[in-house]
Image 1 (cartoon, rainbow, N blue to C red):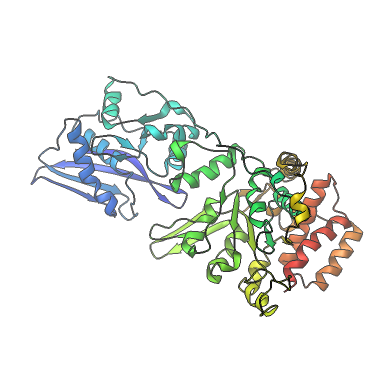
Image 2: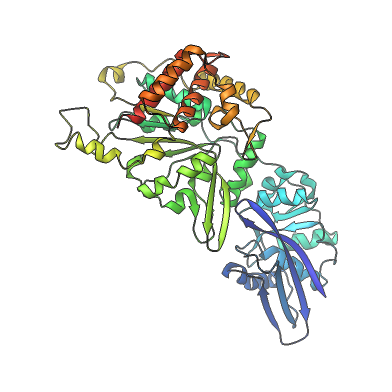
Length: 508
């Protein structure tokens, strides 16, 4: 007799069906797992054996063979414990033979029979819902699985024994409730920053159009403070975006207590981060920081201190919105539609513009330091801004009257205009939501400037030696400026301001 239980394997955010087959045959007692299983899956034999013993069951004195089909698909992780145990229980006639036909199961077993949380429950639940199947998972992740659809078909079990009792009718597992995280505290407020009005303006533009931003200034000018306040003026995630972001967080095991959040991700890796940590990779091709920041902010502080190879690895994800990780044993794709915000000093000592504090190598040290950032990466920056040192007069002044709430309201209005403008439009199979994602003919229609604005852009493109990418990025920023002004037309003043933010990127 062969008993079966459906589970899944993950390739990036793709969910691949896996059929767990258990056979009990005559012969010397043995317990083997086949089907290209890694070490964690192979160790499930001992966890399953101990979990069954904890509930008063023992393995039959037969040859037990577990096959994970398809056999040529790599199987990784501890989430195979639960489906192997359930299929084994069905083979032992502890569970009805057809009890598992309509379910997908995943979970890690403890030695006491408890069902523990694993990564990837949300994408597995969405895949199960698409196949009109229910899902069996740990009780701690029931709220996560309930977001996929019909919560009544989610069995969130605290233990293996509770699942057995449920299938036998001795106990009924209550359907879980979709859980949303309560954001702890509010985001830092722009009111905390004194002075730096130009930088606040650039931050608002970047938030309104999801544009990439580079802040250049001396130490202590407030660059990091400005970047940390960007999430506070971004609109919350909508329902579709919540699922997109949470699927990646689920695969990375970052959903606390199975709760989803409406706050956009903000990732700030240290400058010692490797290429695999930033873009994704490793032995199991896990998502990197650029994917964990999907639909949010990737903040790179001390930009030139990152290795050049690591920074250049961001060029393709920033352009396509996808991080493609190709390895000999894996080829996976993760979404990576991020807003890059970077901060840097103008030179190694940081005091290039101050003769009293600058080092003796100025200005040559500035050229050497800034040359660590490649031209192609800099070409992907929409707004580059010099952030001057804060004066003593600014520090002693009272806090500004306008805080993040007022700026966030203007950003929300501009985002609403963009959402209506691009409704139904897609790029690379993904919906276009902001000006930063518009391209080609769609961008030319949406951001076509008036006659005087077109003349200015044509002249500036030649004077600044703008690339085709740089030209289009100026158009996107100008369109965002018009949206903030409530203007249907991109005027000359909008093009001029957009060029002002672009000019610094080429003053090298």
